[in-house]
Amino acid sequence: MTPVNEKRAYRSRLRAEQAEHTRETVIARAAELFVAEGWHKATIAGIARQAGVSPETIYAVFGNKRALLEAVIARAVRGASPDTPLLEQAGPAGVASAPTQAAQIARFATDITGVLSRVATLMDVVRSAARADAEMRTLLDNLHAGRRRNLKFLVDALLTRGPLRTGLGSDDALDTVWRLCSPELFLFMRDIEGRAPEAYRDWLDKCLGELLLDRP
Image 1: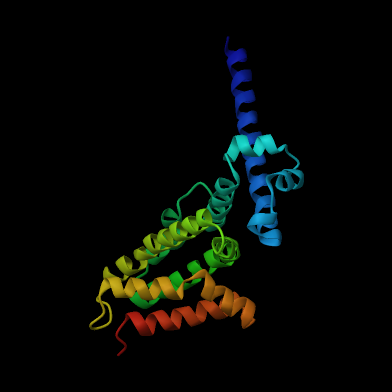
Image 2 (image 1 turned 120 degrees about the vertical axis):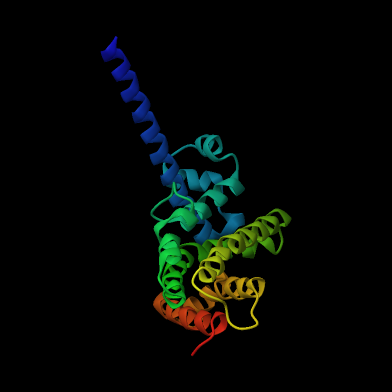
């Protein structure tokens, strides 16, 4: 019986790998089309053609177009570790373990710049669609609420190494981080001003240090 069980296990593993490959291919092609064509013009049929699968496969895996876009954004946020929640990844862990508040901010600026480089354009797709689509407005609000929850980890991490700037409460500090790390501001610097992501990183590092901490 052992050889039969081994064969079944192999086939099961192969099917799982094929399913994961299909999912990743669909997400990659969907990301390209959402950015190139926008929310309304990008269709499941078009994404399916680009991914080399049937529309029925996409519906079976993701359910609908909005759920597919949410999966695309989640994949972009998590980057090279798609199975690991963002706050459990090496970047935030490095922020939490950095020895000083200044080092925490510097590491955070590097990490969040990488996240925004991957996700800001996709967030802009949602923002553009939200002007005329109530469902997309809800999605945009939910994404920004999720950003705020995630960014709170920086304020919490800073408080483990010392106080915030004199007179600055944790809620006001979070407001500052949330605004400065917005996808809209990142895109303005990158696409309108023509700044490299590294310029945004350095500017963010400086601003957060000056606005969140007392300087000698």
